[in-house]
Structure formats: structure tokens, C-alpha cells
Amino acid sequence: MSVAVFCNVCFCEPCKPAPQFSLTSCGHVICEICLQKGKKDECLICRTPCRTLVLSKQTSPDIQSLFMGIDTLCKKYSKEITQISEFQEKHRKHLLAYHRQKTVKLEESLQKVTQQIQQLQRMKTPEQTAQLPFSTTSRKPFSNPSRKQNGYPSCSLHPSRASTSDIFEPMDIDPIPSPMRKV
Image (cartoon, rainbow, N blue to C red; front, side, top):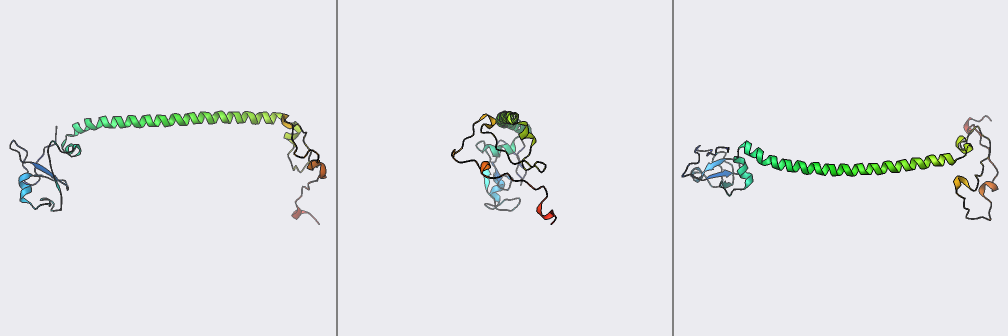
């Protein structure tokens, strides 16, 4: 069912020897007879400058939709809305699949790194894991770890020179900071 078209000036409706109707840019429908009575490029109803468009079967679908019934419009646009909705859902699913795949890869990497850390911690000697460097309770000098720590031989760029731990004497660390020291 379409909306009844009538002239907004004389309220005549289309009939068999129908006058043509025009739509103004300000949104009024005016019949051909009334349009000829008024001033050119001025709306007879609101008296504002306007353009007119003759209504016919060749009028653009956007303009024709202004005169369609709501039920017809709903059917027409529900197909378009369904297509748009399906497109957007497909797009969202594709993005979600990408993020899921990326999450799985990150979780696998995290698991591998965690296993490597656990392996490294198992390879440390109990003395290394229990003793913190710069411990205030320990007065031992820093020890030079063995050349083959963690299963890998250590390489020296200058094999003829002694290591720095061999050159310098061990240093004791005072547990009381200087400002608090009694003179």
C-alpha cells in the first residue's frame, strides 16, 4: 500500500486526467496547476526559495521510497539489512579467528619460555639459587663460576690474561650504610 499523494495547496489527488505532481526541495508536494500560479523557484506553502522535481515512474528510487507504504519499505530494506548484517558478522568472525590464532601462538611461546626458565633453574647449583649477590649476611668474596656453567663452555677473548676475579682481591661489604656509621 502506498501513501496517498495530494497537492499541499489545493489538496487534489491524482485522477485519470491527472495533473503532474512535483516535490519541492523543502518537502512539499504541489500539483502542476498550483505550481503555475505561484512564483518560479519559490514554494507556495512556506515561501522559501526552492527547486522542484516532477514525480513520475522515472524518479529516483530514493524519492519514490518517500511515497511507499511502510510495509513495502520494510520488506525492501529488510533484505538489504540482512545482507549487511551477514557481511558484518562474517567480518567479525574472521577478525575473531585471527585473534584466537594469535593468542594460541602467544600461549605456546609463553609455555616454551616457561619450560626453558624451569630448565635453567634446575641446572643452577643449590648454592647459586640460595645465595643472593650482595647478601649482608655473607662475607664470602664473589666466586668465579666454573668455566663450564649451564653445560656450555665459557669463552674468553683473551685467554693469556687472568680473569678480573683473579686480579682483584675479594671485597667485604659493610652491612651498615655510611651515614648511619658511628665515628
